Image (cartoon, rainbow, N blue to C red):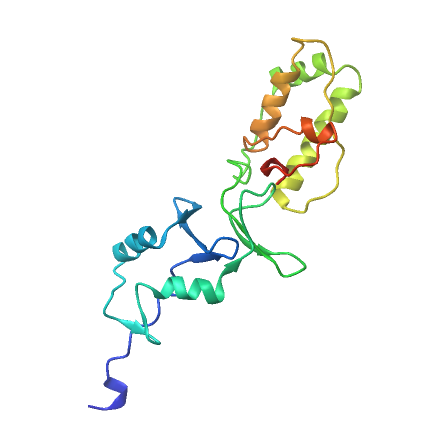
Amino acid sequence: MSDSKKEQPPKPPEHVEVYFDVRDSGYWYRLNGRYVKLKKADIQLHFRSMKLRDDIYHNGIREIDWPLWHAQNKRLIDYAGSLAGHRVGMFKDSAGRAFLVTDEAGGVWNAPEKKTVEPVWFKKFIEQLLQGEQSQHFCYWLAVALKSLRDGDFRPGQVVVLAGPSQCGKSLLQAIITEIFGGRSAGPFRYMMAETQFNQDLV
């Protein structure tokens, strides 16, 4: 039998996407569109369902262990978790640090539907809540912020502060803004009051 007809050894399972977290030596694996942290035994259950085997070796490493070895050598990450304005996946900053974004805001990056009818209720609500030119400025702010989020350009913008009497509609507007931007929000009150301790809300 010629060399060209010899059975070729199986290739390492490089398609199995696993990341190694240098902070706590944990593994991140993508499930149902987001990344979750799994222990070695749990993640190998998924490898077995993909037919990775114990009796095949790649460079002396069992096939079922190979994605974990590969993650430790090629897919190191410095941070994993939610990160405002970013889509699920890995990226590096200017210093070369690797960030794994584990989930993303819902629906923001879906193709927007073409609207043929003006949102009458929303327009009237905004005009009643924000008198005069304030309503127009708010709508410009909302449009620019949403476009920047979808484009991922992180352009600078103004801060919107809602102030007014109780039961006037401020909380309702805040809830609407939160839904438009993907359903995620954070409470900044204690940072505004000069508290300095770190909180996951900051990211």
